[in-house]
Length: 395
Image 1 (cartoon, rainbow, N blue to C red):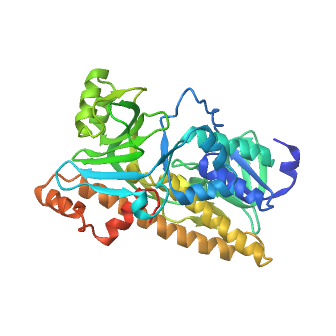
Image 2: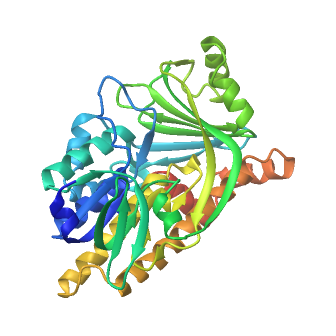
Image 3: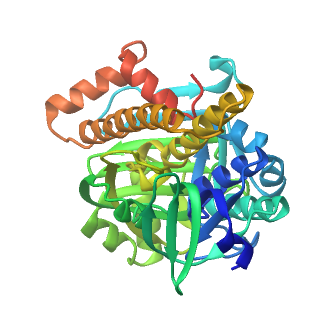
């Protein structure tokens, strides 16, 4: 770590060099703030020949933010799959619900992009912008009247006017700031893998609700699909280890053969599913963003988009302050931002959870209600709005 960083007080320190933390640090740097990033586990470089199993449906507003940060062109040039439609249907019956970009009057609903690619291009942009990335764990936070001292591993210390925790669902910053969690363990896992398909994916996201949980098939740039299959823990563990031929048969059946026969084309990984909401987004000069503040059910593919909306609204607040010749970050601005984002993220998390609960209920009354809700013209306004979110933010 540069001695000069230890000697001066930074405007901001961002803890976490993932997508959300890197985007925030880059945005603050581009606005003239003296900022550094702290990351205890530096990400590996992205490799085009080893696709990342973790992918996102990047919404148009997230694309716009990444474009403003001058990162999106490099992402698209590497590998990104636009999708123009999303189809949702229920294994219990009823007509499918389809969102189409042309019908909504937009060129596309979003892009499917690998996690590792986004992080890699953001890291490159941070380096080009001269943002230091400190390889260290945060072991303590010592708030003062006008700054926060961060105690790092190896008896190092840095000081900043503001600290932003974007260090994931197991956030050290959240714990050190004394912010509690409202959590729900779904007793389920998300199974992810790449599959080859008999029929083309048609640049469409497919999502089928099964009694065991939702199955999403996301179109990829190489013609394959990426799956996110939410399952009870035991079933997820079983499907992660059954012989490949058996897995192919079960995933083809679960997908309703919407793309014909499916065949595994990567390792399978299952990860625990939990909903976590920080009870507050800000504590003094410390604020939380992304999964550190809100980890939601993956059925709507909104986790990273919600985090990037945290970033976008914060940068908008900085821009407004600078246009008024005020300090870029202030108590008033940050409090207003924290209230808005906490409210929006709680509503989104609860709504996605409610959809999961309703569509995972095999009781006949629930199945009948779902069939009515998905029928053309019968979708309630709230659900229409939520599925607009799920379809990439086009609404």
